[in-house]
Length: 122
Image (cartoon, rainbow, N blue to C red; front, side, top):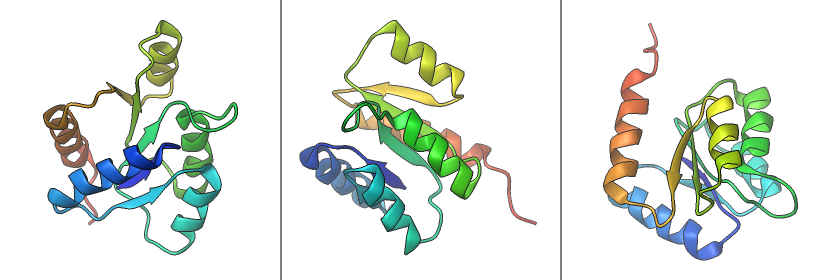
């Protein structure tokens, strides 16, 4: 799982939660860090991205960059922003939306569905 959030506490908390579920976690606080982490790791199974990153960048902007690099990957956008513009943008990008404060069971259920829906290698 690749976790990107500009809040260090959020990254640490998400990494701890996912590690407790026996997930291998790659984490970053910026777009640059995410790209550097991926230079030294296999492609993640799922992207878990905060919507509002530093500057004017969003998790959807990062996802677009990563898709060009890695191909299509399931993506969950996690945000405290309940606005219609965010909801619409996430849906248009064919991503999934979860709101902060994050409910761990909702995340675990969504991740299970996304992983089960992945095409299997021959």
